Amino acid sequence: ALLEKEKEIAREQARAEGKPEHLLDKIALGKLEKFFKEAVLLEQEYFKDSQKSVGQYLKSVSPTLTVAEFVRFQVGGK
Image (cartoon, rainbow, N blue to C red; front, side):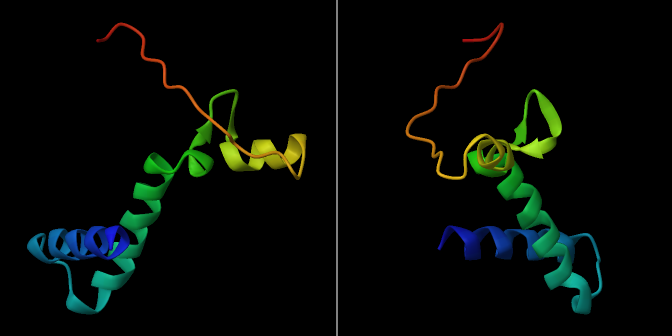
C-alpha cells in the first residue's frame, strides 16, 4: 500500500511537471529508489564509508549479522 501510494505521488508530480506519459513509470521508479535510500535503514548510506549502504556494510562484517535495534541521534536539535 505504501509503495503504490509513493509511486502514484511520484507519477502525479512528474505529470504536473509536464513530463511525457510514456516516461512516468520510469520517473516514478527512480523517485521510489531515492525514497527507499532515505527511508529504509539497510539502504541508507553507511556514515563511515559513503560507497556502501548499511546493509552492504553489515554483510561485509558477517553474512548472518542482522539489525535488532537502532537509535537515531540528532546534533543541535530537539
